[in-house]
Structures are given as C-alpha cells and as structure tokens.
Length: 112
Image 1 (spheres, one colour):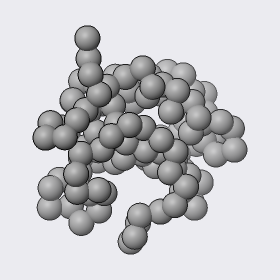
Image 2: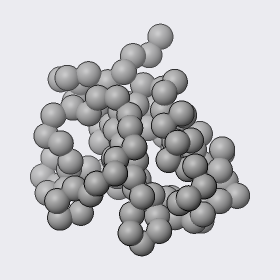
Image 3: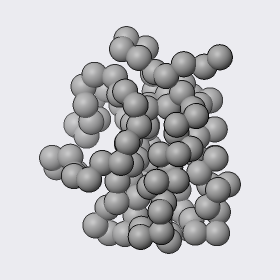
Image 4: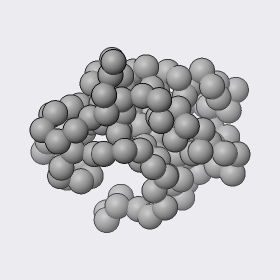
C-alpha cells in the first residue's frame, strides 16, 4: 500500500502548468479529488494568464500517474501540459520542507 509523502522522503518535486479550458469549470476541485486517493502532495491554483499551476511532490512513477489521471479525466479541455523538475537550487522551489496533503491554493508565491 502506498503512503503519503512525509518529512525526510527527499521526493522529486515538479511544477506542472496546464493550459486550456481549466478555470471556472471545477478543474481545481477535480485535481484535489484525484490527489485524495494517491501518494502525492502539493497544491493547485489558478494563474492570472488563464492556466492552472501545480506544485507536486511524490515518487517519480506516482507523479507521472497523477498527471496522466488528470489528463485522462479532462483531455477535451486541456491544450498543453508543461512539466518542470524543481531543482534544489531553484529560487522558486516553494516551501523548503516536504509538502504534506493536497489543496487548492488561492494566493501566489512571492515572485511567482
């Protein structure tokens, strides 16, 4: 049985940005629902330019499966999925500690 990521796991972290018909259509709620049954942590939020941005942390295969589940659920609404690994030297890596749980985020990170 898979478990939620926890402190000290050193799990990969990714930025995932999805463009298309993803705002005002329950997209973020759907992402949270998909995350609830998976060993993935992070958040999802709307971006001013009309996309949805996620910060995700999970084992490599779990990251891939989570993003694929989102794409399969809303393929007709998605135009593009951009994924970028968050490196430890990345100034926009988000929280310095491990992420816990999964939620909708309503405010932007400083500088992002």
